[in-house]
Length: 135
Image 1 (cartoon, rainbow, N blue to C red):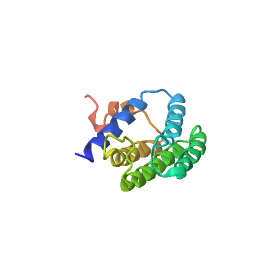
Image 2 (image 1 turned 180 degrees about the vertical axis):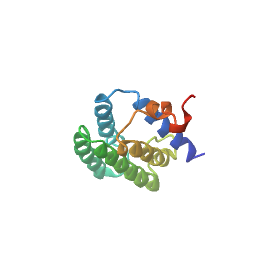
Image 3 (image 1 turned 90 degrees about the vertical axis):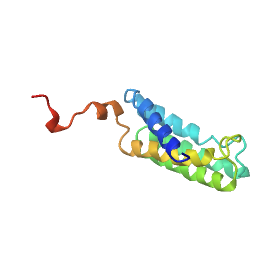
Image 4 (image 1 turned 120 degrees about the horizontal axis):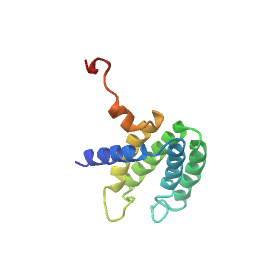
């Protein structure tokens, strides 16, 4: 369950984000990536090194304003930071021991969607296979 729920959360996140119309969808995702870069600032446990990710993610988010690929890169960078914190024992949510692990599983789901161009999920669900047309 520790892997399934983060994947489900990532899929729910993708579904909700895909409801935002373009071009705002990409811009909102860029802002979310920038915010994710600051998620560990309040007590991440890496000391001054905690300031590295927000700086890098600010640049990545800026590039993400015009590129889904950069947003996907941002989510993968956050995944790497999640892994470091999980291994160090300083989770993103201090009251949830495995929250950084869950975030590290969830973030790549969102990244894959971003690498696909952040398409609307409802469009995928509404499409019918070519041979499935009503006769």
